[in-house]
Image 1: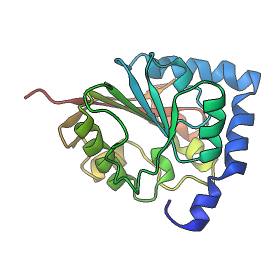
Image 2 (image 1 turned 30 degrees about the horizontal axis):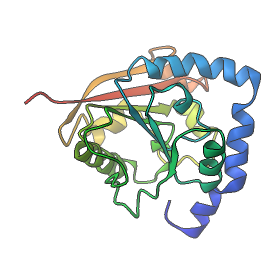
Image 3 (image 1 turned 45 degrees about the vertical axis):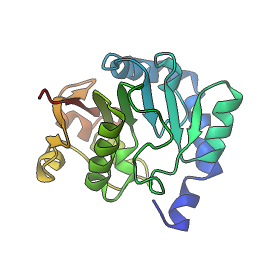
Length: 207
């Protein structure tokens, strides 16, 4: 996501598409069901990395923050009173230097990781940045197979096998606490149902 072509792919047109899609009544109804699942894993003020159209961010605890590389979305969210900040993770080496260490408790990465070609490297860098901030938990949501194939901007298909192939059960000082699928806890269901997702929850390991 560093080339000019790739940045254009996530420009104002992509932002408009995300917002238009999120405004659909049917989609809001369905999305609410999935957002409640994410919220059940949240502890305290949270960082929504790649907050997109802001559906999750609007429901997060007070003093949570959204980070977004799409300037059109940042401007829109600020107009709506949400704390969303422009963040170029590559320029910052994923260190979250614009945020105060020790304040936030959870990092949410929902439908973002699959957009990176080198997603394993990105996940390691995100975990390193989370550790610098003193975060206790990292919540990751990625689409199942059909969901992954439905969006041309997706770059890496992520499932339990991918996690194991890249030795990602433990990253930095975090270990997987939960790995499940939602709403049907069967990975094969995602081969047929576009909205089946994989949820990963990393927690800080006890010393």
